[in-house]
Length: 286
Image (cartoon, one colour):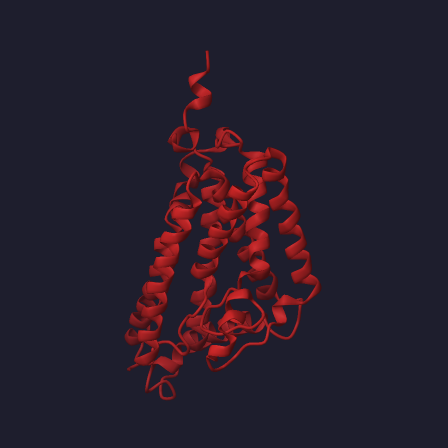
């Protein structure tokens, strides 16, 4: 007789949910929120018409710290933000791939996220027209994740006839793509200041960049494919590897990880609104 414990979909059992994946995703999302907050703090004075007339030592110190943080991403491979950014992006995309190994319908997941990303693009271009965003988003992180999920779904279907190929091919392709990206210095991708339709495919593939948020498919899909392998190799039962460490201590961060899409869509508006209110309280005016 077949054991019920084996046939039951464990990934839906909250008591056995792989909480550590939600936790790591939450850490990555919180890091993203911090990164975007630093951008707001660095350049918030451009939001206000009387910024030159307001002299506040605390606000000036905050802005200086935030600018120093952002400047650490440019001009040197030793900068803190340079490595922190790539580390957390890799972690987040790796976890996207792990989730692909858990899901039974990646085609549907990828398609739905693709629709969300298209709507999101429309919203950013509307914000650009009223001066809130500088460029808008043509192919950002949501678009990249949607395409990566669909490509993972296709690879899963193509290799379904052989369990070893299905398990190890994502790892081999993923490592090769990441290695090629590093060897080709992918972080030095040319960045267009004006959208060029002739480069649209380049924006998608990753050979050129454009927009307020941009993530080309290559080499980012490499991290997703490696994560897909890890999900299949480490979580064959779709259950936590660390159940004894689970507890109330991780709930705030795992909550963020479980609601990553909502946090992504809303966090910048919330952060900018809160900081804008603080600025109004100390004398800044639009």
